[in-house]
Image (cartoon, rainbow over all chains, first blue to last red; front, top):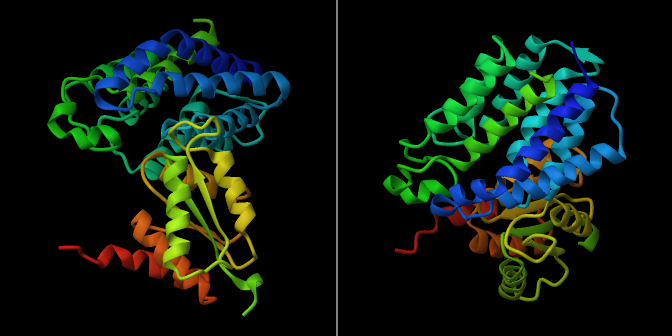
Length: 199
Length: 136
């Protein structure tokens, strides 16, 4: 079972990998975006870590809702409301449970991903974070490791796609050949689950 | 008509200068609609380009006179942040609405309409109508 500590570890592991990969995320965002994805997410997840140290929510749902709130308020770019909505909606779907199992997390994350698709209007294949999140959540039924691998594959598979959402969509065919930064950071979020599980 | 009844208007842009200038332009073109509460929410809190949920929430609170708040945005994260704040439920004043309109033209139409004491539906409709005005 996954308790509040697991979810706290998930958030801190994600914050650490966003820190490590911030420059790479910004470099990916430079040819097809506005070159701030890494620094924006870094600021957001730093705020998440600080908030989780200050307040100590006792349930998985409350941790994700607090984290999502921090991302919406501090990121400053589109990834703030998108990741914020993902975590908040997932947290709400988990409700007040003190512990959840992997299948319940997968189901809640699916609700979160659906909310992101509604908010941003993106579907699979649009070269967005959805392209890593959907395969990641699909594979979560198998194992955390499978989810991480599927999300990474999903992020890599955005390279040949033409962007249909966000700033990259203005570039049309010129967006082809670049890996999507949002899908890349989403793969980091999914990979954080493996670290939290200690696998 | 009393000031209490006026719809408030928030202008959200990635740039502090754009938000402030459009607010000034709209009030100027609205013929001295000085009573209409208009607040810009531009850029990040640090003064950079981007969107700040805190600045938007503060601006909305500052223009709320109880008749509703029309929130107009430019692009991308401005739209998504307002939608996310509305989804939170308690971040923006009751009867706040994201109005789908061109930013500059919609702001002028919204301020002019709000100055007449029109309700939020009418303000939103006037701003949205700006989409149908073709320049060529």
